[in-house]
Amino acid sequence: PESGWALKFSLIVLTFAASGLIWVTVLHFLVRPWRRKDVQDDNRFHSVDQIQEQSIYTWLNVNPVFVLKCRYYFQDINGKEIRDRSGGHPLSIGKDKNVVFFQIGKQYLFLSRKQRKFLFKKSVVSSMEFETWFEFILGLWSMFIPLNSHAGGDDEDEHLLRSEVMAHSRTAWSN
Image 1 (cartoon, rainbow, N blue to C red):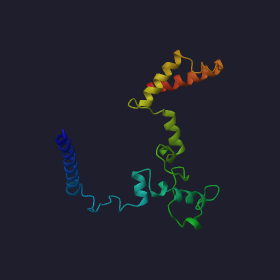
Image 2 (cartoon, helix red, strand yellow):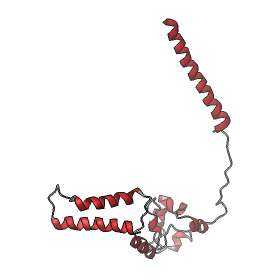
Image 3 (spheres, rainbow, N blue to C red):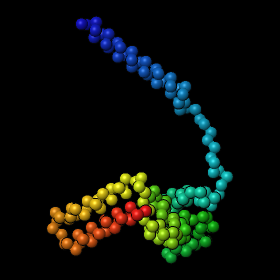
Image 4 (cartoon, one colour):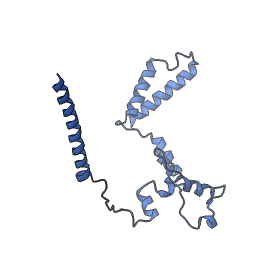
């Protein structure tokens, strides 16, 4: 019985050493984390205006300090540019000439008012998104189960809420 214990322990140590050796070998010869690679920037010869044509975000609108500087130092209270302070430096502005900070999910802020009205009037939904199906199921569910039955709420409010949910579900399916 004693030799079985020593054999098991030596196999565990040997397995640990072998796996450590394999890990170090793969890290050194395949991954090579200490080797520097020169990465070529595809946009290094483009101006800020050219990059803004390709992308919504630039350094100008993702840097929160610069966005605040644009709004409160380069512009007056009415949003007009103060040329003496900005010196012709590009500002972090959207289509409506308002200073806008880029946030994921808030890309619509960079559109003009006309473009935003069109976008929100259209009610853009996709059948590949989970939320579309979830809202549809909730809309069907609300037809059979009162939404605020536990609170003993006002029937008029309940009807209004149910009709809003169903209207949203119908627009989701009509597109």
